[in-house]
Length: 604
Image (cartoon, rainbow, N blue to C red; front, side, top):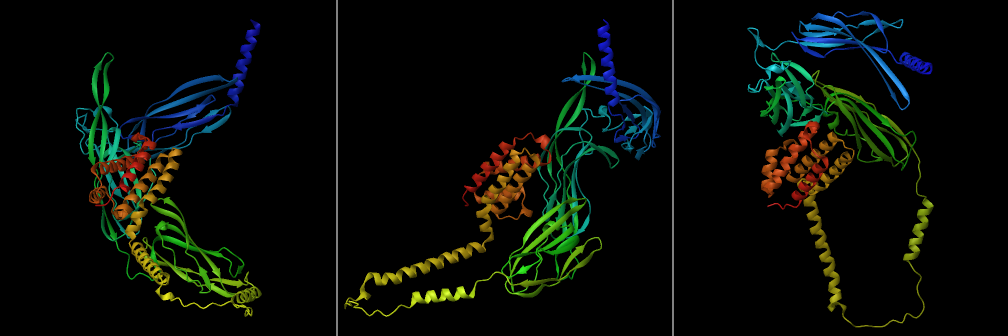
């Protein structure tokens, strides 16, 4: 018996030591948002210690109606021969939200084991109540914070669930960034969501932001509170002036309502799904033309930029390659800048520049760098310079053109490796010795023949064959020139090849189980393929003109229907992968099969 008591005492001592070693923490928990008039709790949790002298904070915009209520818990476990334990003290205070606004909850303090611990401050947003939500003491309409108001007996009207396209600016310049956001506003939970027709962005270049739509936020809009999910967010760069419109989209949405059902346990709420077809609004932006006259050094850069140049070599020698780097950094249409024209000395052989873009979305625009690298080879010894130039961009904030002076770069070229002149002379003599031979003095055994070679077939064949060859080369040359001048024909022939390359990249994301990048690459392959195949610019592609053009092309209806279906499926999966339930392998195979069918279709 005494032996058992000793064992228990040892175990208690070990657990006590482990508890003493465990890290002590003091944290605060509160909701991010609450509607005015509702109650909410703030919890302060002390872990792995016993506290005293708890000092609660004063919360503005709310009234305390209860607390602090203290609850304690203790747990221990033994896993793989190792024991662990934890304890906690939780102080709960209940408040009523009184005044709309955003407030900071100050830190709370407590003393434990001779030390003073403080929580971090928290931020809480108190939203105004719905307008006309209360009338004669009774709730009116549907409320996002009241499940009893979300009855299945009520219809879902346009103010309870809608999709809205909004623009960050209503007036911008050409090439100036504007943010487009598509949001779902709902007072009901959503069980299923499907895009049946995406809004079109004709006249814009698009830079999409990665999103994972979820109803985890509440917004106050037009006097009502809604759960909000961002379906799509992108930065647009308008390509022409005038009024440009983002057309409305169509969506299939399943909302969850509740009905009261009697059971053995009393009245319970049972979810009821209601399928809805929702159409978003359309949004219009007024695009201002860039001011005239435009500087001759302006090549289309809009935003805010700076320029840096560098020559990646210290010693220049003839016939040795060097690199001149021209880097533009900043924010704006950085990805779409043209290569600057550099006036290299005529004594240099210069190759086409290599372009390296390193940019990403930052705030309301795209920022980063765009580097152009020019490879050149000096041909002669001497002192040269890459002349000074001017880089001009348009700053929308000041509505002015800004000039950046790029300084000249001096280059001194020394003699490099060259072909020896002695070797050249030796080669010339060797060729002459092979060309001019000594006079032969021996018996030549000459024989006289009187056959007329002019009447032989071989004689005329030597004229006919070159003539046929020349005519064939002329025909092939004219055919090649004609085909190369037809850009759309080249794109059409390259369409399947380019699409297959993109599908290879999509296959990499498929193996990595990367949903977002997989569907993004699949859509790029399909849209790019259709643009080249049907000779339609990407900015003008939409499902209506794709369907019309494919019918004109001679594609059967089943193939067109399958194509539009896979586009819808991929677009939905890109913006809401957790709701799509697609098998990426099946989607990959379907896209490959569609492309093969289109490639095997002969134009009428």
